[in-house]
Length: 94
Length: 204
Image 1 (cartoon, each protein chain N blue to C red):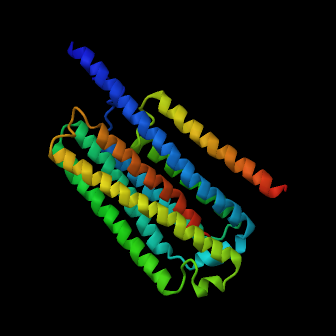
Image 2 (tube, helix red, strand yellow; image 1 turned 120 degrees about the vertical axis):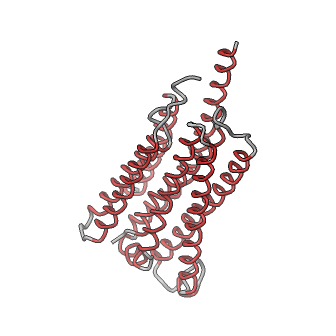
């Protein structure tokens, strides 16, 4: 068997990631209760991004998988970003 | 010779996973389009989105977040157990995932039925009497969490198949790519919820 594709992650790592995800959830809920004006959305989205990174890297194994999957992921993320930027340019300056 | 067949097998798994990732990216774009609509309208109707979001139950949203994150953990643990050759534990974790998924959908059912009994559903008199921004918020809420809910149900069906495959030894320690790909799908469902939760339930 190829070691690369068969990287085993122990139960412990997953449980630590899960605890981190729950911690970030409680942070985002707590922060939402505090009035921080326009920063609320930025903080909420930053925490969501950190949680996604944990899920993608560890739960979805992307960190240990073939590099081509990272390329796919980067491409779809970049596509989405371009669509968002172009739409907002159109929306704000029309 | 055995080395050779291993190589072929390895290549198969990579392409199977590649197919799954490509499919996941079409899903990302599907939901991405909806997040885009959400972003534009939230920008346009900031105050009304806040007002409308007050009606949503943050408690039930948080509970569902915890449930879904835990279900992602049990799927990951199930794959780890299968890698170690522990068929029994792998099945136990998958059954846990199914229970979590069911809990999520039951919560969703109660959440939606409360909203509907308050007259808050697309096309209702109460909702149409509200300003445009709030109508849009509820339209997006039902479409996005609804489509996500459909994904949860599809994921449950896929996991049910995997459970049968493991029982029949069609998915084993040597060949568990079906379990891995189903896991990837389940994590994507979790990922989408990670963004839906703050955008709908945590607007202040």
